[in-house]
Image (tube, rainbow, N blue to C red; front, side, top):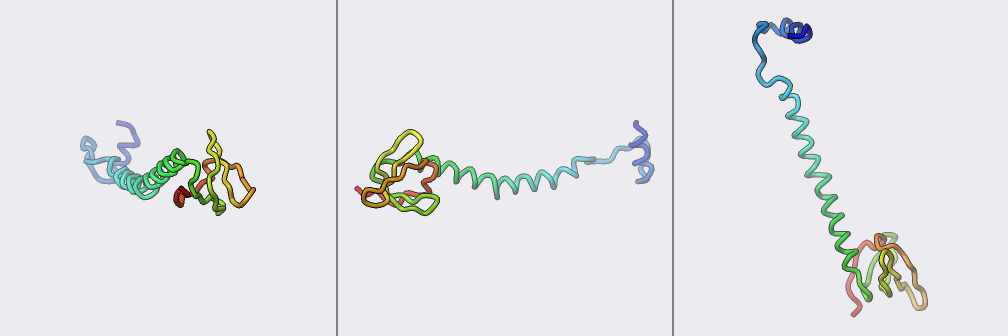
Length: 109
């Protein structure tokens, strides 16, 4: 036995040959509990929102009414690989990243 363990046992009053039940595992139980709660409160909902946003981006098509993350309302005029062209008024078109689209209101068709 190491001197540190002997010293700890001497201070607690336990015999030299006896071992404590549970040991350091009892210290990790609350930590594991908090990590599980952290996962279900923060990480899991965020990953679900990210999946929904990716599905929304994949489903974009010409004619959809959209709202961008900056609050611009418009109609999708063209869909490219990583960008969309949004018509916001007559003769006014803005090319922006697909990730800037926050929500799809409805199709204009």
